[in-house]
Picture: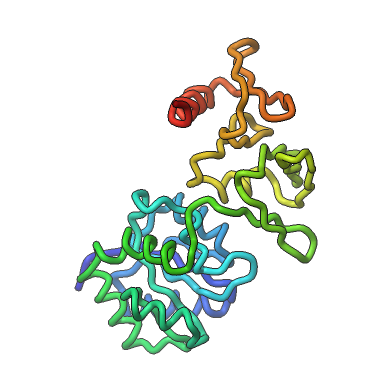
Length: 254
């Protein structure tokens, strides 16, 4: 097959990313690697930016596993295929066989890499929406269920429905929960905007705020636009974000 394809590599091991990139250049010249990423969140940012045809996705990574990809995309928005890479022949591999999802065991053999790319090109339609749907179904991953908040050396998982807003302040973000608790995270607001880009209930309405639109109790047109959340929390709305906010409110109203 000779169709040119753009690809992204997501793997937490730098040497693995470099090796796979080199193998693709040598054995699959029809593939152009447009970006690579060391973990899933930055990988999702690259997917949204470059709109690749194909993703080479490692399974075992710190924070979010490659199997968590289904949490971040609505099935209908998926236009890319996935070839998983893993060093472990574990239970996920058995599931992949049942779901006809392609994978490569590390160390990756050149002939198997070529075969996987050829299968993708031949059966491209199967490698998109049905793959993500199968991941969500088999691994119990529905879009927009929990968010991992990196705190020190641990990750705290919070239901999306329990989050009111994110307030950015330089390199930090304060996360306000529905019960009134405030959690300070050493990630900037852009990190959460990228992570939640495909979750329709969250919207960055201001340079300093991302809100959960499901918790809006009131909207006022005064002062350019203001929304009120649970507990009377007041959040300003930037004029350029107002049309998108009103559209989301309409979608979530009876």
